Image (cartoon, rainbow, N blue to C red; front, side):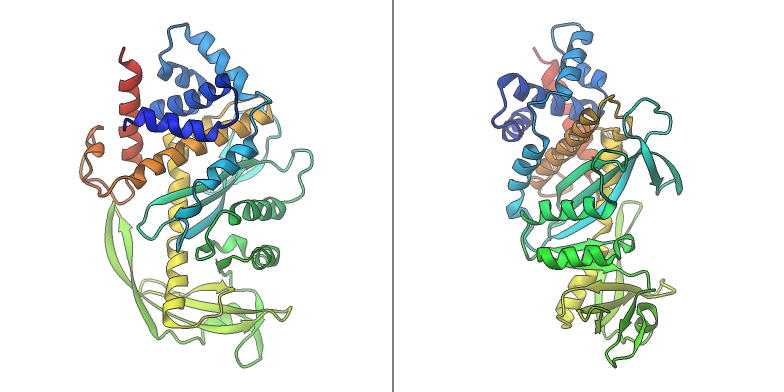
Length: 389
């Protein structure tokens, strides 16, 4: 089946219940963003190659971006329903990212964000992101939504995170492990995970005071120094697009939180670490298989960082421009759906030597994270289809 037909089917799923003009708009937005690898409406219009002036195409797209009869929450719900069978034994990474708008003045609800790549504060919007990685390494995007602390009705960052967890967890398999970085070492998030019923692993800062196996209270950093690491497992370190084997040691102990809740403190280390990596999980199984699986779940969390970078670069997400909050959120939603379609195409690829990677010219072999090359190849296919009579 042609890529354009697959994309039309995907747009039909996402636009189910919409009128024909709105379905055409959803299809055109996804086609143009993937073909031109841009979120700019002018680039989307050029990719569509319509038999009319570009100005009229852009006006049509701009008008529909803020159309009131498109329900973003329904589209997210429809998409999540398509991912239910793909999260069995998967690792689900949760993270906060940002859209930096350094020079924007008139865009609504611009708020303070922290640009983690530049390590400085700036103006822009926050993003909540969820991405699952299957045991075979394929990515399953689950969620991406913009929020700002200046919007009416905003409660807190924790409230946005917990709302995302509730929305996504209802469509994921219970065998999946949710992985969080140290910035989410918060009691409210742990309480929400326990209430929702998901298994999590959170990297520790090391300052949390808990009761150790002997009943004495100490920080997680102090307890980690005394935990033995009898288990070994192999993982891979990817550098310059090539995977190299790395051996880790790990061990764990059951600790008790201040509220009496029990948790498992896991220590993981390899030879290049000066200090052990500390993880906290609500899974109390201390067997070798369980402990190593939890460690691997956190190590695989890095894939969401790769996915975030890929979305921003493949679709120039930080070039989003709209003068309404609805428009900003909808453009972010379309960028997410475009990325989700690429990942659906990737599910059908059996190896990195697939012929599709030869459509776009590159130097060297296909790297471990092949989604950039896939985006370029799919763009070539769509542009050829739109250009043909």
